[in-house]
Image (cartoon, rainbow, N blue to C red; front, side):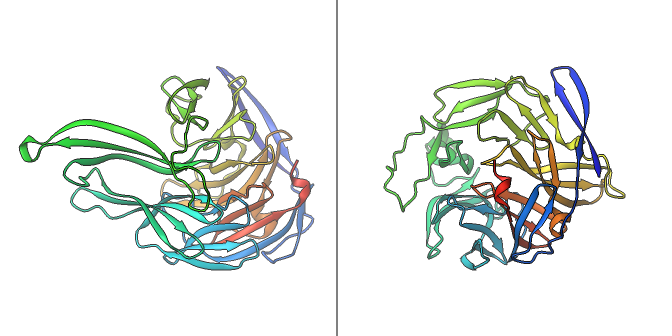
Length: 371
C-alpha cells in the first residue's frame, strides 16, 4: 500500500488531504503481446513493442492518427508509421530537425522542420506529407527573422497546432518593406492564422476559423478565445503569476492542466499534482509531472514523472490519475517497463503509446477502463 499527499488550493485557502492508492499487483506483464495484468480494477490486455525510436528535442515525439489506427514517431532519421499490431514502415527521410507536427487527416501529417542558424537567420519549412507515398508539399519556407526576399521578412511563426475543435493550423507574421539599402523601411506587419487543409478532403481552402477556439493565458487570467480573434471570454484567473506555457483542457471543458497543476474552472480550485509524490528516488531533490494530457473519453490524466538532482535529469515513471475517484496508477511496474516517457492517449482513450529505453510501446487497456 502506498500513500501520496495531495494539495488542494482555492484562492488563499490551502487544504491538505491524503490520496490513498492500493497497488495490488495480480500479475506482471513483461512487454509480451497478449499478456494481461491488473492492479485493483485497472486491467491491461496487451503491451506491444513497436520498435526503435528517437527522442526528438522540443517535440512530443509520438502522435496518434485521428482514427486511432496508427501512430507516428521518428527513428534513425526517418518519420515512421506503425499500426497497433506493430507493423512499421518508413515514410520520409528527415533532412532537418522536426520541430512540431500534427496529423491533418488519417493519411496526412503537417510538419515543421527547423534548420541550423546561418548568418543570423534560422531556416524553417512547413510541409504536408502524404504518409502513403512520402510525397511532400511545401506550404511555407523561409528564414525566421531573416529576409525571405527584398520586400518581406517573417518575424514570427507558430505551428502546426490544433484548435479545440481539431482544426490544424499555423500562425505566421510577416513584415513588409519598401525601398532598398539605406532607404529600405518597414511599412506594416500582418499576422495570419492559416488552416491546413487536407488534400484528401473536399473542404474549401478558404475555411473560416470563426467556429474554432483556443484557450490562452492573458494578463489577468485564462481566456476562451475565438480562433479568428473576434471575441474572448475570461474563464479563470492565474493560479501563479509566473505560470506560462502550453495547457490542456478536458473533454467537457471543466478542467485545465498545465505541467503539474490542474484547475477546476467552475471555482478556480486547483490541484498541484507534483505534491502527490512524497518519496523521491535516491539522490534526487525534486520530481514533477510532465507531458500531461486529458483522456478524450474519461475523467483521467496521463503523465510522466521526471526527477533531477540539480546535475542530471531522469524520467522515472508514467501513469494515470482519475480525478473523480482519486485512482492513481503507475504503469511502469505494472507492465515491467522502465524509463517510460512522453505517453499519449489514443482518440478512444483506451490505448496509450509511449517511449521507453529508445523504443515505442503501445498499452491496450481493458474496456472497463473507459466510463
